[in-house]
Image 1: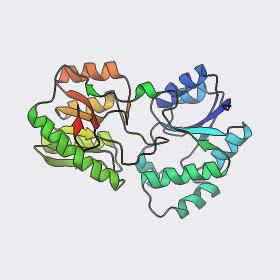
Image 2: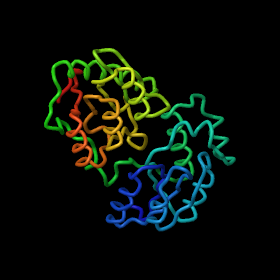
Image 3: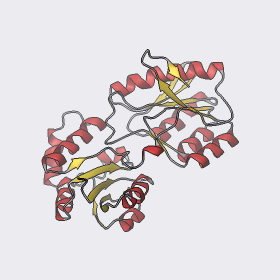
Image 4: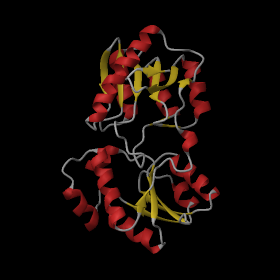
Length: 278
């Protein structure tokens, strides 16, 4: 039997609000742990109850969920990764967990937090629960299709993005003429696009993939209007995303902007033999 109450550990962006709407339609009561300086106040307002936390206040989140009988939760929305080094106020439970994590990279941190929650009887569910329709589709979304040269850049970028994913560095690379202009690290996708696009001058190809063995409970790649706006700002030419393995927000508006800027947007599936299916 499905639990009636569900928790959200919320970051920034629209994902938490979209989830609240879908979960409410499914008959769930929603309790949000909202992060200060990250989560939109509308997210907290839309919940049945909410508490505001600083990054690292794990004990406060657990206490809040237990007070409301929450035994299932999801991680939704973005956390500015550089905040890890400048805007953290951990409580005792958060600090204890942090000191146990040897490698301070995305997957290690999130898996450790999820394990700590589950030890407390709070199961972490996939972030795509109720929202599978937001997964990036396969195929060319724009009228303009990738050229032969752009396909070569996509395939080159794909191999490199997969490699940095294995190392848990990032999910995106920016390439031009089969040369890597930028690799996404802690600064995030949009900053990597601007940095790589400045080096490419124009015609940059952006490739964004899930990491190998990506845990669907958290940190799925996401693209939307802001991604395309960043590519347009540097006069880039292509956004290639792994289909079915990342989130797509505001599809119609994103495609409209891409069309205006002459940017190709394409969802690609990697087949078992390693070839790419457009």
